[in-house]
Image (cartoon, rainbow, N blue to C red):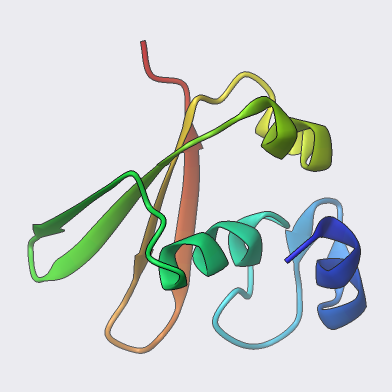
Length: 93
């Protein structure tokens, strides 16, 4: 899912999704990385405290599309029992 598709699908303000649903209050790039998880392309997955946590390495093309990622190197994504997705970008050394 591209940035343009995300803006066409969701109400986004200040880089945050405001549409009700699984990505509400998440960064604009959350659907993009969730799609990567759904395609089975996460770099790492780990079952921790009753949930799957997926790690995805951020590439230069990702940053070109989502400048909000800044200097982040990885994104952690998980879905809670209610279907809401959380996506956190981090800088890992």
